[in-house]
Amino acid sequence: MDSEVRFKALVVEKAPDGSFTRSIAQRRVDDLPEGELLVRVCYSSLNYKDALSATGHPGVTRQFPHTPGIDAVGEVVSCSDDAFAPGDEVIVTGYDLGMETDGGWGEYIRVPSKWAVHLPQGLSPRRSMMLGTAGFTAGLSVLKLEWAGVRPESGEILVTGATGGVGSIAVSILAKAGYRVVAATGKAADEAFLKELGAAQVISREEVTAGVERALMKERWAGAVDVVGGETLSAVLKSTRYGGTVTCCGLVGSAELPVNVHPFILRAVTLIGIDSSHCPSVPRQEVWRRLAGPWEPQMLDSMATEVTLDGLEEKIGLILQGGVRGRVVVRL
Image (cartoon, rainbow, N blue to C red):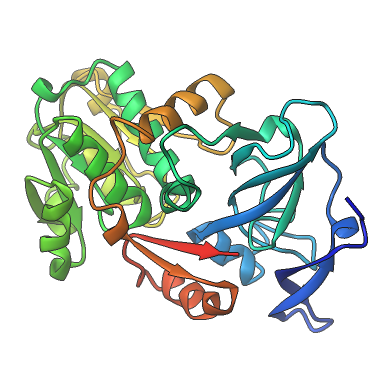
């Protein structure tokens, strides 16, 4: 492919005064970083980490100009190590995509071939980005609960931050897999939405944290998917039943964890960290296989809003304020 070919991308630039600007610009394929795999992107998505990168957060991106987008799906243009063939449809999520490596908010990406997996049969490119990193993280959380021995008959499963991208998909996956799901949210107006996804009960985040100041709380949860962290995760651990398992994949509440050892040494509670960025290939492929089949969330279309690059500006502000429900898909 001609390296001078130009394509459209959202570009974040840093001004001399330290401020950041965003614009839709023309870039050249030759501007992309090194990598074996060149992909023509058809869809990406908007994640909280993308919004941080788009506003210049130094914990996500330090090198500018930069194109965010930690998710991408598209068609292989070329692959120098023959891991993929031209025309293959691939998903790229995680690793460094959209952080320091130019990401999916551009019509082309170039990345190491090991970052990609084949788009599973039965899953369309658009629907794969309705899932994206959020769906993959939710699926990996459920897989880890399953591997830890948490079954539908084990008891109630709590999902915190349930109206967000990860939380809403986790509710749907768990319900479809036969679990009794309790969804916790700070948005009372979304109760009907969560019940449509399959939640058996919707509770407030205040109900989750009531009594968190105690060393232990009343046992309730057989397992939990926590995307909030902080005091919420502390309360979840303290109220998980003997032998239960909690997965942790987010910090929208706080990165700090104010908890004692009692849940672990008196109730044998297991806390499992979920890292979707550098997840090895075998569980990565297994999660995508299940998301394309038995775990594909019901109501996936109703959980997603589609925008073009031009429509991202409004959504970036909304997601930073906690105002996005479900998923935002970006059509390139």
